[in-house]
Length: 122
Image (cartoon, rainbow, N blue to C red; front, side):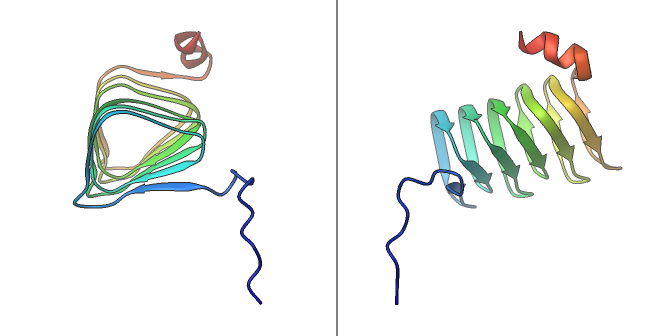
């Protein structure tokens, strides 16, 4: 009735830092990352990052793609698509191939897109 979980499949792994949880230090993941709590240090994921409205991040962030609704104080480097929702606030430089900024989102820093963003990564 219940099959064995496929432990070798990394594609659908998700790390969640829930509201009320505080993480300090360097954080690295191969799977998706969801942050609703607090993180201080560095964040790297080879996959997608989702920053919830209650998140407070004091870190440099690197991700394949990202959707941000909370606050990030640090540089944000996204290889593909970055979405800044209306409740987001980024205090730092932003680099992404594609950037979507909703009305009300705040960015206080330098923004690099397309080829300029690719040059920043190199």
